[in-house]
Length: 140
Image 1: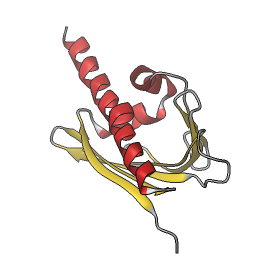
Image 2 (image 1 turned 90 degrees about the vertical axis):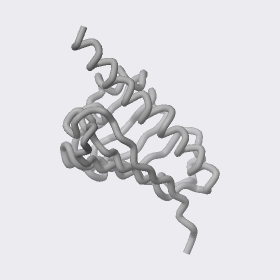
Image 3 (image 1 turned 90 degrees about the horizontal axis):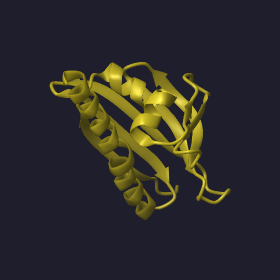
Image 4 (image 1 turned 135 degrees about the vertical axis):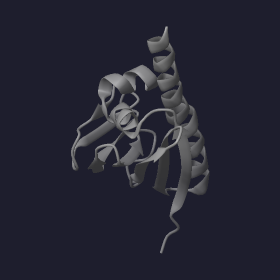
């Protein structure tokens, strides 16, 4: 059996599970925190696309405010490389939401490690910045 290379993290986002789920599935909100065009068809089997089409896949889990899953294949991966799998679970945390992210089935551990950094730099940190900015804007 082949190795399954994986990235796992738990990250606190300063917003409710409902807000975080919407920010991960609503194209307009994704554009606000992540830039670019995205598509998330909000049903299992629906099309998934982030970052102007740089990553595509299929929605594999869709439970509002609780869980989002999708296959993940960046355009730079060869056609013969199978998509990896992403599962995001949202749990209430005293400061907002615990985002439990497990990304499996990478072609190598090096790609898993680089992708893990990408999840932090291009998704989780910008998502948190988006919510902090929204809260500051509402207070002013």
